[in-house]
Amino acid sequence: MWHFRFHGPTPEALVKGREKTYFAYFWNDLAADKRRSLSTADRNAYVAAYSRPGRMRAGWAYFAAWPDTANDFAQMAKTKLPMPVLSIAGEKASAAILVPQMKLVATNVTAVDLKDTGHWLMEERPQETMEALIAFL
Image (cartoon, rainbow, N blue to C red):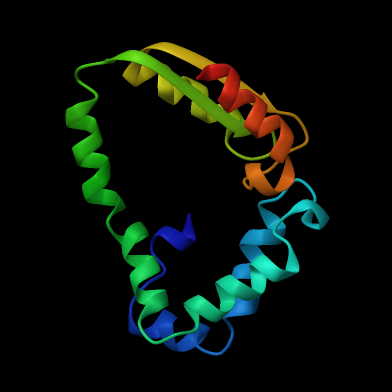
């Protein structure tokens, strides 16, 4: 949960010039197997993009807004979604918590838990992810 509160001038100063190390934590530790996480080319592209002035601040703004987002979602969740909803997650990431969360806000939930998969669905299990999406659609 620390990364939801990690933003502002001090974290920016700590990460500046160390973006590769910062992101490697997420790419490696949130994958079921870091060798199946993001490719070297993708990692380099993200590091180059987020190393530009203001980019880390902009990326962290998404997480900094989560308390307000949670309040907004609590209000919206008072009326359950009537349309079909797909919950797709990696077994070693959020699969165990995502489906119960979706069932709180939707009446027709299809769950797909990708075995031996972490947070990076398309990178770790591209074929299985696409098959799940196509089957749902």
